[in-house]
Amino acid sequence: MQPKQASETQPEASGLQPDPAPDLDPDFVPNPSDQPDPALPAYSGQSQHPGKPEQPGDPSRTGDPLQQPQPAPHGDPVKRQRLVIGAIVVGVLVLIGVVIWVLLNLLGTRPQAVVSTPSPTASLGPLPRDTEAKDFQVGDCFADFDPNASKARAVPCDTEHSAQLGAVHTYPADDSFPGTNALKDKGREVCGNVKLNHEAADKYVLLQQNVYPSTTSWDRGDRRVDCFIVVDSGNTIKEDLLNK
Image (cartoon, rainbow, N blue to C red; front, side):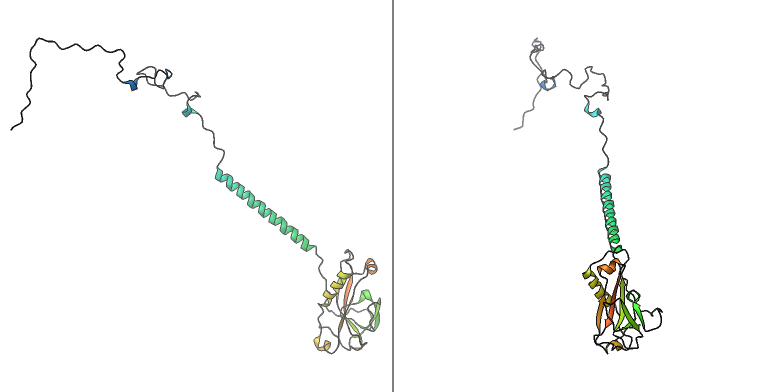
């Protein structure tokens, strides 16, 4: 069975005219979304004059946020950080320099030991002779030596004697009295610097004898700390005990 073809029908001439356009409902709104909201102000950002192009906003108007001048940035934070780090490094270096300077000054003011080395005896006259304690020299040999006496009998070292001056330390003239214990310690230090001729020294029982200033002699200018090599058996030494 074949489908029927739709046939166009011609309006019949009935003499009827089409209805005129229906009357518009005054409450009818074709596109509600396109109508202005009566609750909003009359100006909505659109031109009040259709067809007239809008003028660009006046920069001087404070109501336009896009036209507000932007505040200038307050410097580069990376640059500020570098400046702070540089200042810290410089401060640390200055502090280290000050500490080193103070340490050098403190070390530079420490009194340095002045130890005489054996040297040929200066000519104070022919030997034997009586010699003042202030004139004793390293290498001098003494007969009948008394450490408490202000004088001693100097003799040639190849003759009988009981003591020989091994080393001397002299304090600076402007130093204050260091105290008896400090002088004893200095005496032991000075004796530790004596260089003995062991071939000769091994023949004797040798002792060390320190002589240092008292408070009274210090006030008179005595600054010597002497180290003597002695024997307690009398004038039994007959040779030079120092390694020259």
